[in-house]
Length: 123
Image (cartoon, rainbow, N blue to C red; front, side):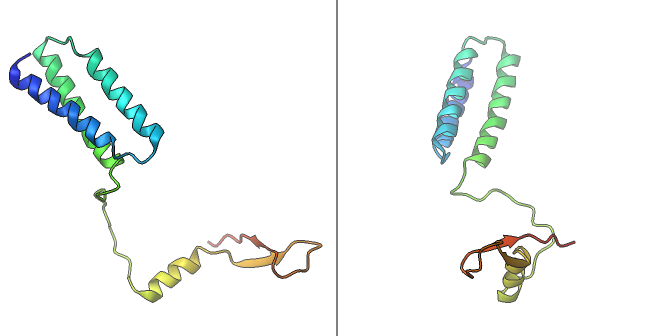
């Protein structure tokens, strides 16, 4: 393995481990770190330059995926499509459209503080 290729692989390894630290869930974080270490150890003895380049490009794709998945400090790029109107009225309509349409009491319970929400599906 050439010196520049080795440095590139080590940079990728460190970057992947660094990005995994941003996963908020402990289980995801430890699983990702374990998988990265195992994959790099498994391919440590690769000598073929074409195979090494293939593995490096796969690692770069995986690094991008890790950055998108574990990044709570940076928003992921989102295609907004059609913009929704903003403002108090629009937010109020959005909240009420997701709410249940009726409230009924349980049979045998006449106390008003114990209602049960029944969902009425809106077309």
